[in-house]
Image (spheres, one colour):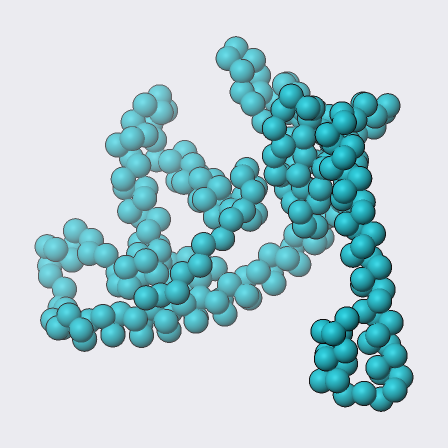
Length: 249
């Protein structure tokens, strides 16, 4: 009905995962409402969530209640003093809800684009991009809490891991040894390994060789396509003719 598309992100990455970011917000709310002994957090949780869902967010311009339900939820004052609501037939209510949600989502997209631009400018001030490639050894950030040990004094990086493949510019497939399973992590969780590189196991050598071969083929194909496009522009061919030549290639 609403054309919702599910997206997948890497875990423990608040900047790309709304659930992780919400946990930070929820912890901030509970930290200001629970008692000093912190044992009453479960009784405060329902009120914290109710306040969060009814609050208009700066990034979207709407409350979570409105974006999920298509209307604002009733609060205790609304039940006590009453709130006028127009009664609609089922079909009319469905059409009205769909139009209302479509308009709201369009407005949210515009608000999020503006917010994303602001956040990007703020984030880029101190960012230092890291570039990794297959066959490189790295440390992987894995925060753990051990009983009786101060978390801030515990080593949070483990490894080293071998990068088997770069799935994209920000997601890497890594593996620690032949006895462990590969996993996918965000590049922000990686740190370059300095020192003598460990020995690569046979299966990893095969995977890296295949990756190098595929990368070489992609590079040759990209150069070929660039030469075809350059030749077409030199001959004064139209964009449609150039696209046809690239397709035939």
